[in-house]
Image (cartoon, rainbow, N blue to C red; front, side, top):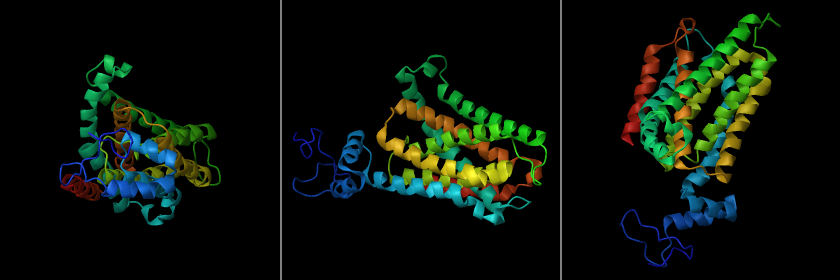
Length: 299
């Protein structure tokens, strides 16, 4: 069978006909690649083609990465969220984020467990529930960070009318969330489920999650977060996406990263919703979860 455009790869299959496209007819991916190559550089375009990344996804990822970075930078401008009882919009965003994890991410993690088991990596050698242990690790790690920030905050004296964690705790806290944001940026390009729809749902869920996260981090670190922290997290998303273009990891590693992300998302949402002093809105949280679940199941 002749190869595709002299690349040595089998020809693409037209999804509408189930057959290779007619020779000499420009297919949609081919036309898209003609537009992508000048924008990303021919070398990057060849890498993307080699690893099987859809051209439309390759174009959308930088746009969405910048969009998520802007959420970090400007979520603090949404002053209507800073109310008690808790803003219904924050509760709805938290519900949507958790729905994405339970309806979309965890089923993918379950499927990825088989990939991890076949890979022979260390975590797969001591338990058949390896990916769930990674999710638990993400949950516990971010719980520990939250407790560390709260304890440091309570131990500090008031400065300019504000009680904030120590500088050391700030850097540990923000550094950990920078890795977390960078991971999300990376997974924009390398997710368990490929395709444009999957990318858009992932980006939307993480954007809502960033709004919730930023609210909590700003409450801990106040002006220090506005001066420094939000810029670090915004840059981390873009850097993570850029690394995604340069480095591809295998499916087993992606499954492990998704598991860690799932645990982190659940903890970071729940810690914002459960404290009694938040006076959270259950119905708004439930509505956000139900609406996003319906959207995920409809696709």
